[in-house]
Image (cartoon, rainbow, N blue to C red; front, side, top):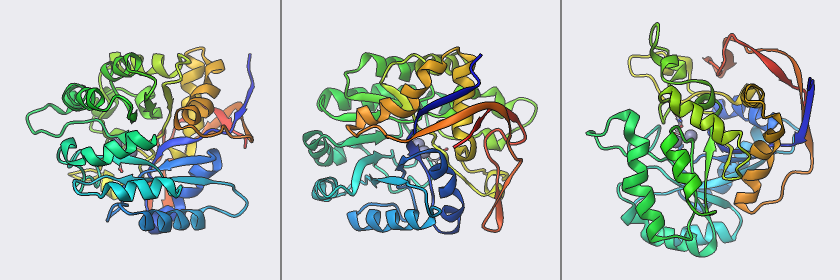
Length: 345
Ligand SMILES: NC(=O)N[C@@H](CC(=O)O)C(=O)O
Ligand SMILES: [Zn+2]
Ligand SMILES: [Zn+2]
């Protein structure tokens, strides 16, 4: 029986670190487990300029405890009228690693997002030309589309036509939640990949709705039926380099989650690797974990793999019910549970 696992230090290819007092609390959790992270730009106001990204990166570094080598990779939030030259300049100077497509209204702080991809054609052309990754929140927002269908419909209405139009564009289909998305990514060229969160590997929509409504299991895209969860588990543990780790850790204050109109987002950063590893163990795929966590992401982004390593030990790991944060509490994913692996550093 395997009792310890040492792998190259992983990276988190999709995380929300927030800003201000919450940033000061949450950054350490991501920095403790991951060397790099693709930091989502959906702040208020969103990160839409090279200067704003540079300043946000400094605030993140200031929030990370001394002695931890953490490298936040910054992302530009695309809007309908972003100047393509801002993207070109930000990428060339190394400030922007990627740009993010939020369909307007799809998720937390996406109101300034893109109302029609036709509006960002010029930006996407530049990105395809320079080889910059487009990160995509893949859900349509039309009121007539059922929330459980929004990812599948996005593939047919937006993503497939976009890739037909710009077949060279590098796209990360983020936080995928459906068998449809798995199939689409598998059947696309090598320029299309996907991130998978721990929660979508662990829970289906019952976790959110059976026996009472559970706001801490609510995130976007919303968890789907069991068949979709199983497809995601197969994809993540398959060894296919198109699938890699992106936690989508998205903290919201307890009172903002436990509300008549609760926020979408699951705070999974504190035990992210332990959570993923439970899945790989259950799927008899411990040998595929390093690829998913530490190798496939850098390969897709064209970045070197990390030289340092981390170790996880087979030992009980109790997840607290809540974490104090700036006068409020954050409820972590797996709150109150005991996981079977412990991050040892
Ligand atoms: N995933 C979520 O449910 N929420 C994210 C936004 C996002 O990634 O869509 C957030 O910023 O809170
Ligand atoms: Zn999203
Ligand atoms: Zn996210």
